[in-house]
Amino acid sequence: MIVTAPKRIYIGLLSLGVGLMALMGGAICYAFIYRPHYLVKGLLVLIGAFLLVAVPFLLLGLMGIVLSILSERRLPSFENCIHTTMNLLLPIVVLLGKALRVGKEPVERSFVSVNNYLVRLAARSCQPNELLVLLPHCLQDTECSHKITVRLNNCQRCGRCPVGPLLDLHDEIGFFISVATGGSQARRIVKDRRPKAILAVACERELTSGIQDVGSIPVLGILNQRPEGPCRNTRVDPLAVRQVLEHFLRGDD
Image (cartoon, rainbow, N blue to C red; front, top):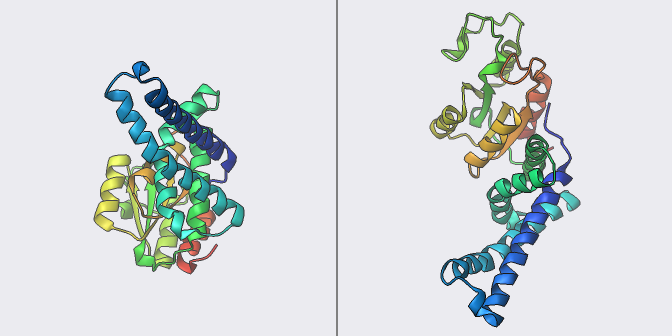
């Protein structure tokens, strides 16, 4: 399924993180001006200087995310700030979620949901051969002897797992498709292929790290279904994959 988790989780924690950074920067500036003897020379001054530069930029990014969602419009002038804010503060957002007893997976799902929404707003069209579909190896039936991690065309399209229908979709549309056994291999595939857009099927952790790794390449994430638990006989709806591909090919939502 395309990730549609509540966006408010990530945005709320992101707002809290930027707010705490602003308070910290303000406190250091106050101490520097009025209570310089409280400061540990060097380190805190450097932290304060960094926050003075970073917080306004992050506030612009946060404002850009909120305005994009409220207006349902792409805001090109905010894109660099949005991208940096989304990715740079994710570890802080996860820590804040943990402190507030919000699980890591809901935070990651919310992050991917916000990312998907912003990518859809950008409405960038591309040709089929500019599209990369990244699949996790756990989509293949664990008892299958025709391992697709060795060669994707080993798949016999028997219908026991989603790989066959996805290859049928590949034959119909003509996008580039690959199976990754982990983040390092996925990064290598992206580097070698240099796609204009990526559709990634994975769990929350892999989708989140993948979106951060690819830089400015737009990524739409589809969360795999795990009826037998993580990394074993996972599933994905080929219809959801088709709908995302059509979004990229049409350049609209």
